[in-house]
Structure formats: structure tokens, C-alpha cells
Picture 1 (cartoon, one colour):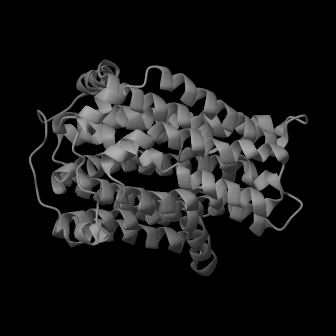
Picture 2: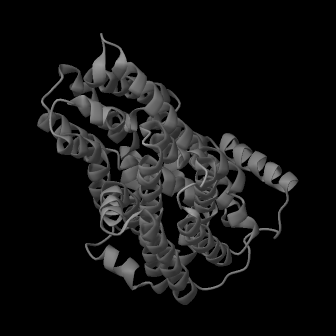
Amino acid sequence: MTEPPSIDPYGYRRVLRNREARGLLLAQVASEFGDQIARVALALLVLQRTNSALYAALTLAVSYVPGVVAAALLGSLADRYPRRALMLAVDLGQILLIGGLAVIAVEGTPFVLLLLVLLVSEVLTVPFASARAALYPDVLPDPEDFVAAQGMSRAVHLTTQVFGAVIGAAIVGLVGARTALALDALTFLVSYTVIRVSVLARPAADEPGTSPRRILRDLGDGISDLAGDPARRALVLLAWGSALFLVAPEAVALAYRPDLAPVVGGALLAAVPAGSAIGALLLPRVRLLTQVRLLLPMAAAACLPLFASSVDPPALVAAALWFLGGLLQAFMLTVFTLVTLLTPGERRGRVLGVAVSGFNAGTALSFALVGWLATLEPIGPARAVSLAGAFGLVLVAALRVGWPTRELEDAV
């Protein structure tokens, strides 16, 4: 089999020279930083108003809910409506919602109302992300360029996780929560402007229009698509199962060394996403066919640093191990890249919606399960992470039995 040429050292420059791809990346930077600012600003506002850590935590937890439910149900909107128009409509909706939130977030505003507005805003991020992901193969028809763009997009997402909360908190500290929310609304205006100027209009990929019945039918089609294709089914099962161990260190980071300065907990919390961001930039330089062959070995290798946490290493050593685990987690980039490339253009939205929904559900379950294990006295945070690593090794071994190596290589 002849392998496609690898991405040259200037592959990222080639992506950035593409006006549409550059616009999609810039819009992602603006909108995702805006999302982080809104979450932090509202959580701090709730904390100031109620003096309740529980209410502040619930405010942050709301941001994870749409990723489980809305991704599956609303993913098909990216197939049924023109993707550029859908992204523009979402940005306008976000400007109105977050701007309105800045206006109503005054003394006496019911806590439930603030959460409801934030929840609607988080729901709107789902069709925006689905439309953006589904557009990339049209904008970059060369698979190697698409892989490079996916790496950049993944790195942007992880970087906003690492720095977004810190920057959001700093902005709130400087100008206050309500002003921070107003500034957040401007980030969506930036995203709207960039998309309108740089991304070309295209017709809907599938029969336009939707309804509750069609949404449910599209959801069923997305599930059937994944279940009926051995290659994509194996990829998605790997992604969903991996979600149960990928975020294990983040689930216990703040409780790992509570006796040390808070900055240590912050470093531990950032270790995995920082490693993942660097891995997402490095992996696209490897040939796509080679990435396919490395999928299971990398998944197994990503478990080993977590398993090594069983010896309860010092915080600095744990951070280094978790960073290495995050670096090896770059295999997830290959997983979602392949699912996108192997899905017909008119069905990308619904299929990616189902795939992302399951991954988000696994992530939420991992946070809850690993966090619970860490509270058990015989286990504790370090061993909870090591158990997650052990589970990952068992998962990879089980998937290896029926892994569709030939189908994936032929598809590439």
C-alpha cells in the first residue's frame, strides 16, 4: 500500500493561508474564550451573591449538560441548514443572550434565571461546534491539510481550557462580573464578523428544514451509521471508553495535594490539557496511515503514566506523568479525524453529534466515578488515577481482539 505524503514542516502555514480555514480557527478562538469568560464570570457572580460554593459549582456544572444531550439531538442541524448561516445565527443569539445576561445580572435576580440563560447559551455552542467541524473537510479537501487543521483546532480548544479560566477570572477581578459578561458578548461579535467575512456560503448538505420528529429520526440515523460500519464503530467505542480514563487526573488534581499551595493544584489541573495541546500539534506531522497503525499502541501508552500514579509520587512528578499521558492522548485527534473523513458530507453533523455526545457522557461519568474513588480511604486520589489507567489497559486489550485494522487502512 502506498502511503500518502507526510505533512511537511509548513503544513500549518498552508492551512493558515486558506482564508476559510483561518477564519474558522479565529472564530473558534473568539467564541471559546468567550464561553470560558461567561462561565467563570457567572460562577463568581453567583458566589458573590449567594456566598455558596455549591451554587457556584452548579453554575459551572451547567456548562457540561448540553455536551451530553444537545450534541446528539442538535448535531443534525449542521446537515439540515447551511453551516455558515447556522454559525452566524448562533453568534447573533449568543450576543443577545450574554449581552442580556450582563444587563439582568443585578442584585435580586433569581439564581435559577441566571442558570437558565447560561444553559441556553451553552446549548447554542453545540450546533456552532457541529457546523464548524462539518465544514472543515469542505474547506480543506486535502485529507493531510484537514488533519493539520484538526490538530490546530484541538490545540485551540485545549489551550482555552488551560488559560481561559485564568484569563476569565483576571478580567472579572479587574472590571467586575457584569462588565466581563459584556466583554464576552463582544467576543461573539468578533466571531460573527470573522465568519461573515472569511467563510463562503454553501447550501445545506442534506434536505433542508427540521422538526422534532426529524431530529429524532436523524439521531437514529446517526446511531445506525456508526453501529453499521465496523471501522467507525470501533473508533467511537475507543473514544467513548477512553473518556473514562483520559480525564482521571483532572478529576482529582485539586485534591491530590491539598496541603500545598493552590498553584500546585492548578499546575496538576493543567498538566493533562497542556500535554494534549502539544500532542495535537505534533501528531499531524505523522502520516495519516501511520496514525491509524499507532491508534491502539498510543491508547495503551497513554494509560501507563496514569497507572504509575499508584506509587503516590510527589506533586511535581505526578504533573510530569500526567503531562506525558496528555501528550499520548493525541490519538483521540486521529479518532475524530477518521470518523469525520469516513462519514458522507450530508451526514457529518448527526454522526459527529452522536460521537461527541457519548464522549462527553463518558467524561462526565469519569469525573464522578474517579472523584468518588478518590474519597475512599483505602484508595485516595493517586490510586484512583492508577485504577483509571488499569481500566484503560483492559479496554485497549478488549478492543484489540476485533479491531478492524484492514478496514481502517483500506479507508485511509
